[in-house]
Image 1 (tube, helix red, strand yellow):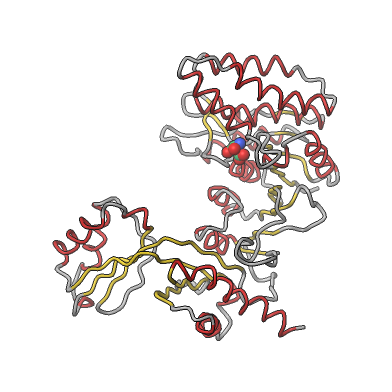
Image 2: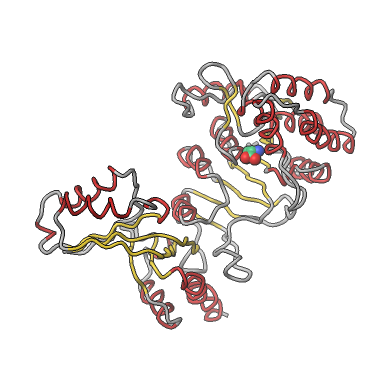
Length: 445
Ligand code: ASP
């Protein structure tokens, strides 16, 4: 028998009807033995997440205000679920303790973590599974980083002692024994950590979309879903803004060689997206895997004749950035030019100083900052072996009348990044999608 760790996001557990779907999914596959819940999320666009209500209670408590009105909203949410599902757990005893501790100043991490904790207690009761407090198995070190070794061994042993268990997401235990949360959306990370600790066959991440799409649906109409993507490809796509998973949720499962399967709680019949380690067995009918991009980058263009022969030139340019606390994104460079791509927000209010400092350190012929750049990454493991990818890409942009201001192909040949004017961004994404996905389908059928 295999083991699947199934993490359910906030919208998947927002009310009793969603809990019922989750139970059905879990019971339909005996390998689904460990479940990692988020806190109840939004039931509609206007709703508030329980985590946000808890942060609010903590804020009010910090100001010495009465948290009762805010806390009652939380009580209502959990009671609504428990009553509809006919649960017998003594919810008020748990809620009263949480309220008391928040008022006593237990802190933001404790308060926020209770969303997952209480949902875990409800879910365990509903399923008849064991409840494992994440505080007993997920550990942070003195610097606040995840202590992977300790977590793996303690959590692994803990999990092995239970056949079916619920482990709440989003938090663990700091080096002083207090509750500590991950950053927002961190239940994804908990799920990955649990999957690694129990050496799961697959980490299922259940959410409200059927996996990753080949392009942003706000730009391209009905983009094709991605069936299989490698962890490396996903890293490139998420860096460029395609967000499905918390970034830090990739590492634990990636190093353990465990695939992640993104699934839709509301459409469990759909296979979703598999994020895997190996690419060989997963031929796609498209040359590319996905397109993602971002607006608002800037290029710092430094020019100097004979730059290529000057020792330490690049280091000094980067030193100027480092002194100003600016981290750079890409560095496509020529013989006598060096371009450093940065987020526009990273150099806000620092442009003059940066230019001056680069002049002082490097004595270049010119330094210019060009703003309003959008970067688009066309990502695909299939590009490594195919000829003509860039021809097709640039042809598409040319036909759409788009001027390419920057080109950067990673040495892995996993992606081609182009920089275009912010104003051309959406059209460029559509043109690339058309060339690689729509026309590909037309050619074949
Ligand atoms: N409930 C937490 C949040 O809203 C963590 C999570 O849902 O993953 O950020």
